[in-house]
Amino acid sequence: MWRMINYIKTKGVEKFVDIETFRKHGHEFIDWVADYYKEVEKYPVRASVTPGQVKSQLPQNPPLKGESMEKIFADFQEIILPGISHWQHPGWFAYFPANTSPPSILAEILTAGLGAQCMVWATSPAATELEEVVLSWLGQMLGLPANMQGVIQDTASTATLCALLSAREKASNFSINEQGFDHPLTVYASEEAHSSIEKDVKIAGFGKTNLRNIPTDENLALIPASLEEAIIRDKNEGKKPACVIATIGTTSSTAIDPLEAIGQICRRHNIWLHVDAAFAGAAAMLEEKREMLQGMEYVDSFVVNPHKWLLTNFDCSAYFVKEPEVLTKTFAIQPEYLKTSQDKEVKNFRDWGIQLGRRFRALKLWFVLRSYGINGLKEMLRNHLELAQTFKSWVEEDKNFQLMAPVNLSLICFRFKPEGKSAEELNYLNELLLKRINDTGQVFLTHTTLKNQYALRMAIGQRTTSKKQVQEAWDLIQEKAQELMT
Ligand SMILES: *Cc1c(COP(=O)(O)O)cnc(C)c1O
Image (cartoon, rainbow, N blue to C red; front, side, top):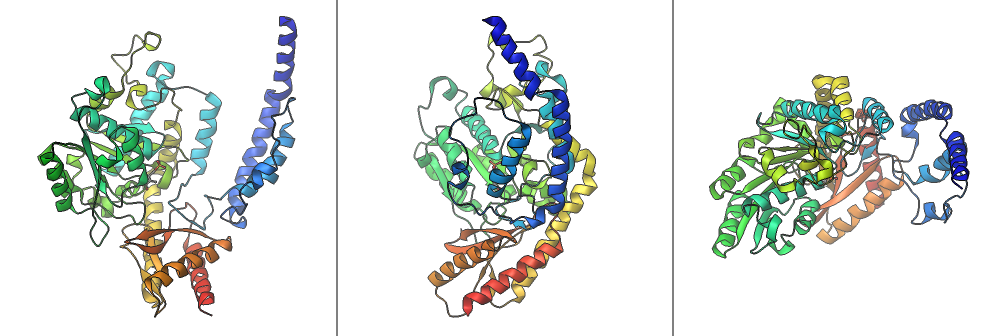
């Protein structure tokens, strides 16, 4: 019996995981990816499959016998690829970018090849130490306070959850970890804050009714006076304010909350201040944009996603904290089987976040930072900012279009606004316009609502986007808008 199983196993291994076959396909796949990058503009940016179309082409049961890589890859091309939206297409203007780059992909191959599980220092010391070094580099590049220390999380949603849990424990003197909530703690963020905040507030046990959505001004930035009023009201009602989340670059419109004023309020009331700079934080590399981080000395925690606008493939979210002890005290666990003799001298990143097992994500960020250098990354960011200003000027010059929010970075919120249309008609017209634009497959834009008005979002940030695609997008938008009026 055992011999039989071993025989099957060996045969299976030889047949499917033969290292020379791996080498052959490895070369082919790199060629395929390189060609894909060369030709990505030929693909429709947005997948146009209908719900269920992909599933219906896949067998309902897993294969009993192993299949050849040729066959699997053919199905990848025929079934999977048509159902993929091309985030690396230079005509990608939807959501925010999730840009990647050749050095990042090469590092990711090495990470997958090593297959290391980097939960504690001892399970791969280089992974932990490289993570410390590259996040220190990144902190310097963004001009973060020197006393902040970083750790890589999977996403900004998770980083913000870590911030909320740390704030919760600090505000309760670490008693909620032990006994659960015995009185309500409150959380504050602008009404424009990301949806992950509400989700995280629920997961962390605060309860949605204890999240205050603070009003915003005409620039869609949080109003500090309203924040302080809400804090005082809660205190008077016997609630304990635990955390304020300021957004640098909101998802809808890249609005920038006034950090300094918010920081002073947090200091006065002794409240944890977390900064969500998931997208916009990257721009703090630029001296001319660094002003948005004025007030960082008040900040307890900060998140930025290199997987959005810093050429590092998803996922890689950088989370910085001022007092790592609060984070580790919130998360630390010490089962016997994970104790090591170096625990006192090293960082064990398992205690810096939610997951135990960790991928070696620092490698790709290291490859990117070294390949492009500070200057290369700044050049890309400046290029995107400049393209956004150009696009903005086109919108402003066309009397049939309207700018809907300040262009703080590389996102332009705008709408088609022909004369004599009601608010409702304009919302409908713009929704239709967006559909017509996206149906061409040449570009992909998404939308938002700003103060109840439907707005199109042109988010520039793909690595290879140049003036050509931005010009083509604007021509297409104008053409489709014209068609709507005839
Ligand atoms: C994209 C974004 C997030 C969510 O990022 P994930 O890494 O996908 O969790 C959170 N906040 C802001 C402001 C964002 O733009």
